[in-house]
Length: 369
Ligand SMILES: *[C@@H]1O[C@H](CO)[C@@H](O)[C@H](O)[C@H]1NC(C)=O
Ligand SMILES: *[C@@H]1O[C@H](CO)[C@@H](O)[C@H](O)[C@H]1NC(C)=O
Ligand SMILES: *[C@@H]1O[C@H](CO)[C@@H](O)[C@H](O)[C@H]1NC(C)=O
Ligand SMILES: *[C@@H]1O[C@H](CO)[C@@H](O)[C@H](O)[C@H]1NC(C)=O
Ligand SMILES: *[C@@H]1O[C@H](CO)[C@@H](O)[C@H](O)[C@H]1NC(C)=O
Ligand SMILES: *[C@@H]1O[C@H](CO)[C@@H](O)[C@H](O)[C@H]1NC(C)=O
Ligand SMILES: *[C@@H]1O[C@H](CO)[C@@H](O)[C@H](O)[C@H]1NC(C)=O
Image 1: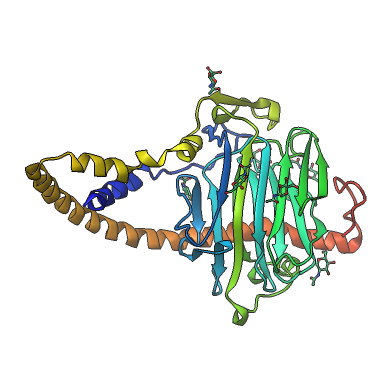
Image 2 (image 1 turned 120 degrees about the vertical axis):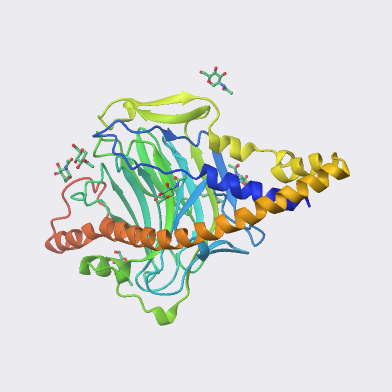
């Protein structure tokens, strides 16, 4: 009975807390503050995991395509047009991200995670499904697509087993560490030439080989052969540490995009509250407790009104589902286009590379492709 009460309440809460987020570039506008992680998030996924915690994660594409198995969260593409994108609802302002994951196999299939800020600073890791010996790191400052910062790093079979991809990010450097070895070190530079603003974590899988731009297809390793589907990226665990604790939000105090311009508001972040919520104060537990304390008459009265509310909720929910399905299609198209747009610079990059013009700036340390 307790779960009958819980169901409509949970649905109502879910609908009421759904918020619309306005995309805003802090270099050109005064934007809403970024919700901070303000703590460490340590999640390991197993076959008994039922879902990603939607208080922490926003699945912006491919909601139903994430399942859980012995090795972790399985993000699976089965047909042309599929893509899966998960974004954190929180930001970190420097810190550390460790993903233990197995990339999807399959020519043209890209498994990826990145850190992305509102002024489009970006720290990336991208794994081509058809390349069993190299993975790519990349970064951008201010979303400047004239920058060519991709580098490739040897990894033995990124699609054949779990590997440890760790990014350590502070005001001095960004380090990409793969299976315990430092693969890349990017030293601090001025804003626009070094990622330094509060960033969300985004991860997912998409069909780079099905992109419209030929350069993207080449970069991805060729066209996707869907007869080889399903293509599954497996994420066993995600460990994210925000460099700041006791922080609820991050705000750009000016339009320089410099890390020194970021101010934080002290307090317990909503992510930290979510993560420390004791099991005993869960809505099910407290509903059960109150329910048991009630008289029989009250129970009947409550049951009657709950059934009434339930009927209303089912009607409202069916309506929302129809709307969501329509919205879902539109959003997915948008997400695909965004991924593709993000990848389009690679055709230019390839062209430059072919001409030998890539050895210009920020490639650092004589790493080779
Ligand atoms: C989740 O992402 C979608 C699409 O980008 C966005 O419209 C929505 O506001 C996001 N939700 C939250 C809670 O940030
Ligand atoms: C914001 O400003 C930067 C730097 O002036 C510019 O490159 C970028 O296009 C602007 N973005 C928007 C959305 O206007
Ligand atoms: C993260 O959780 C795992 C087990 O779930 C534990 O072994 C590990 O020590 C934790 N790491 C940190 C940094 O808390
Ligand atoms: C894997 O990537 C490296 C680095 O870009 C490249 O040299 C190699 O040819 C690629 N292999 C395949 C099979 O695409
Ligand atoms: C974008 O990057 C290119 C290459 O580094 C640089 O020449 C250009 O000035 C940058 N643009 C902005 C707006 O920072
Ligand atoms: C992953 O690599 C990082 C960096 O070397 C290391 O600190 C961490 O312990 C590794 N995680 C696991 C689960 O081995
Ligand atoms: C968080 O910061 C506020 C303001 O600086 C301070 O008063 C409070 O004691 C801090 N709380 C914790 C748990 O550190």
